[in-house]
Length: 461
Image (cartoon, rainbow, N blue to C red; front, side, top):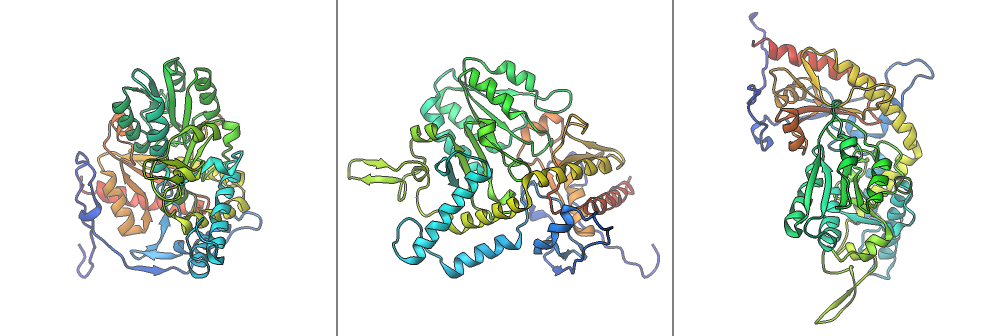
């Protein structure tokens, strides 16, 4: 090493790729020194400004330095960033009309109630539900799935009934049904992957039978980036007399989702993945199903009348929203929907498909990389994310070096999909995921940083 030159090397506790991912981030170096980054739009030819360039100024968090480098945020499948419009909506609620909903006759309560219920109508319109009463606000999509499991599931499933799902589901779409199956005697059946590393739709169709009561599937995989034909799956399930629950967490923020066209019985999504606040999600359920389901939680707001020996319950959606709800968060979600709708979901989807193909193509140039999921083609569209591994380098080491040396934020771990990773023969993967405010320049920065990272670790061989 040249005299006077100091090379800073971060601590990498997971250099051995055979070691499992950490259970917490406490063992990783913690760096909290963020500096504001004065961003300006890159020089582009007239008429060639992308959606990412146009919307990026709306997201203050993106314009900063992290660990001495310009932030490149590529962890959108975990959570999205929030535009100024959403931040302002939250601030305005708490500053101007903070109050509880549905309970007061004074101005602040009436204003809060109106805005809270308006947010519900915005969600219904956004996914084309037939009525806003089909939208139940929950803490997140996980709670929404649990709501269905513990109300519809426990009331309708019996020994021998079958729940069909896939090995590629998020833990939140597996664990609740494992618990319900244990309580009811129902049987869980799992669809595997086909040769293109997509849940085997042909096998799924063959698995659905007269014993099937429920099909639980994702719309877009948070690991494989694959998109399932939900309309076809719903037709097959309904022909067998089964219901369908769709995990739409990775589709609602990125494409047009029309629940009437899909004809799904239940659909769940989370606000924080669609530019809204954390702490709120929603369940869509067909009116006839929600009306027949018992309450999920007991307490205030979900009742009609309470007597000492019994209670009667409110109609949906109030029946499933016990206690003080996440009022500000719902209003913030409504603001996020306004923002996304103003851009246009088809426009977002078209742009992200271009980004998805660009990301996949550029990643393929990295030496010894393995990208999971289908290869994009004229007939196969990937979502704007790639899960991958680089030979003999642990994904957590990759993510740590990218963050500390380059300011690039990606995800590492099992992405709440351990059964899928076991099927793929790995215990973890790295994941870069994009949203409409990302650009090809973000991808280029990521690829340059990833190549530098790979070279760094290969230098130890």
